[in-house]
Image (cartoon, rainbow, N blue to C red; front, side, top):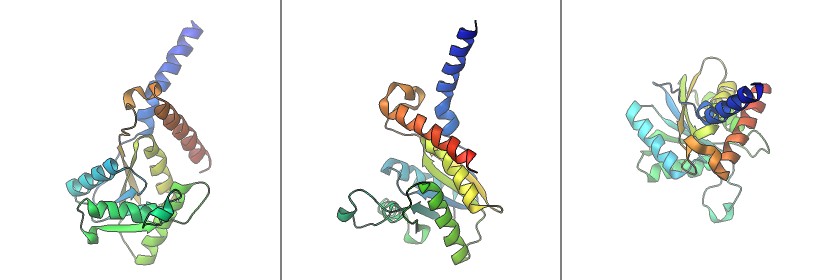
Length: 194
């Protein structure tokens, strides 16, 4: 009986892992934050979100482009993501790239700190931020942006479903297993290091 209960619990946890990590809990009436490393389809969904909910600005975050940078005209994911949003039709006054420095670990947190520093330096008074992230990275992104921005800011999150695998059956693909398990470990690390 214990073995059966244990097996059922494991199946329940596996089936719920993606939906736990890929949280959708947006806040409105503020600015949108987009992680610049997102694939094009996620950036297009960020534009839809921006237009639908009338955000004041899109801040695009991200550190240095580490692969193929000599072939790219953009040095950071923030700049590349912002340029992509502009090519997709957003107005230049709506998009602000906020590059982060190169770090070995905690890249998302470094991006969030760079955003906080940029907001402080430019006297931006928005207090609501909605972070657009990819699938199971979303819960950790919100946690790290909340930690970096600190008190006085409300941080929501919108998860764009990862198109590289079926979110409802993530355990049936190598990419899904690698992503969900990796994000589970990374989220636990971020939560425990708070």
